[in-house]
Amino acid sequence: MLTKLSLAEARLNEIERSLADPTLYTRPEEATQLSRERKALLPMVETYRAYRAALSRMNEAAELSKTAGEDQELQQLANDEYRTAREESERHWQELKVLLVPRDPDDDKSVVMEIRAGTGGEEAALFAADLYRMYQMYAMKRRLKVEPMHLNETELGGIKEVIFTVEGEGAYARLKFESGVHRVQRVPKTESQGRIQTSTVTVAVLPEAQEVEVEINPADIRMESCKSSGAGGQHVNKTESAVRLTHKPTGIVVECQEERSQFKNRDKAMKLLRAKLYDIKQREQSEKIASERRSQVGSGERSEKIRTYNFAQGRVSDHRISLTLYQLENFLNGDMDEMIDALLTADAAEKLKGTNETA
Image 1: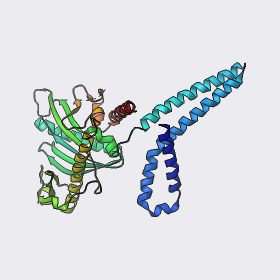
Image 2: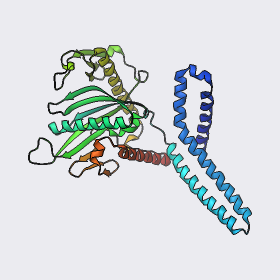
Image 3: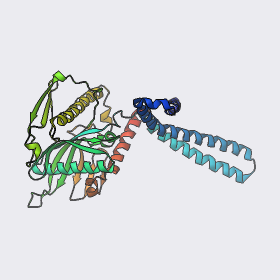
Image 4: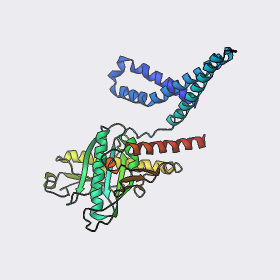
């Protein structure tokens, strides 16, 4: 572990020397890559340096204690300093163990999200609309950008299906644990007897893939233009600007209808298709690693019930980490960080546990 930390510090020093070279900025891609690497290494190296500083203070305090002799006041001062420095070193050591846990390489990516109404009819569609609004508000609070790709609404304002991107650094890190079945328990607007109904909505979160990560043969794509579906008489329903792409080898079908331009819709549809193919690729790789994802806070499978939103009790409960927050209204208004931070902490703890077991 100390060897890894020393190597990380040496790499950071090397990067900072490169970033100080003015000629680097004639190569913007390399400069950007080095800046990102520095940003990733800095917390670990700073904590490592703080750990070493605490160890140095411990040694100095131990030496002072030896030379203090009969001076009780100096002896007490040395003992206090030793104890404080030891506590700091132990805290930094624990922090370093977490920081050394392998980071998800997709964490900095933007994401493609899909929300689909499940069981519950119109009530499920209305809750799907609530979740879409929740993620939009959360993205706004985190200064992330939401771009719709495909929207299929109901006459009552619900959503049968919505596909959208959340763009910005760290989007996948913050949203990756939202994949799964979200359950709502409330009295539907259409219910006259005041009975609570349970409905479900499925959410999928896919890291956005670049062309270099997923190669798509143009011959494998069948493109169709069509009129957009959905409630209302807006422009998208009157022209054949919507695009449907079929990936012949896998049978995956994607659609995009939100732009007036067929070219822009095709571009967005290709982005969605790449994300889906990248997701398949990542899942196949994960299957080769013995239950890696299953040992964490959740597998992310869409069939897995991950969270319940209970309106009668004003609570939201995440079943993977047994956390309940009695702040449902705030949560649906985008105040999700407490839950997301807890999920990330639980995931890091599971990964650290796995690292310790194989060490």
